[in-house]
Image (tube, rainbow, N blue to C red; front, top):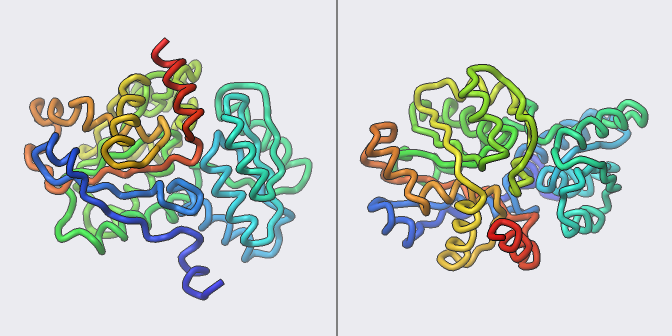
Length: 326
């Protein structure tokens, strides 16, 4: 492995592509930060790769363990294999079979626990970490993870001729959101509007904002299981109070329709969690926010973070179409 890749972690600098279809819809330039092009299929390799490297450099770990419905587990398994660290991934029961197989292909030990939510898997991961002396790689709530994710914004700064009109991203537990906010502060873009998108039934950040307290969702009822944390992390909740942050929720159907449109227009298959942010454009949400004065009229360029599709394939898409449209 080159010295450069060791410094940068295991992620690649992802393409920044203009979307003709979205630009036409929005009447402004829309650019796609293609995190689906990462080696593990999602942005998660940025932060989790960074944390795994820190663990490996200490030479004190007997292995790593991560609780994940998919992408964080994939990133942990991939980084651990590259670092010759044993990896255990604990999955909630709702995880697609293809994800479990991909993790095994990376050489990870996979354990599946009863429960649809990530929180159930996390409880088991913490228990196993204690017994087996493993280092916990948190999928979204750790400063090292946020630091790794902040590299997205540094890449945007290097590629864009001017600062973004707004950035749109999906929120699960809030790791990507925290990384983006950290990155925006670092490059002097702290006032750029950030639109946080969730699906109904996996909307822990929106739920907390409405309650004005970091409260827990009673249950995960969305099919976007990659967003399936019952409670956002504290740092995400703190960032969400900033005046330039907007939290919005779409239905599973709107997210699914966005996935289908994106596949048709951009020839890329992403997961339902990613569809939540794409739905901000495809469902007409952004023009509504502009009319309400919550987003500026001029959003040139509008940056969409295409967070990934590591847990999506054609059978999974057909399954979601059948379940959501029933």
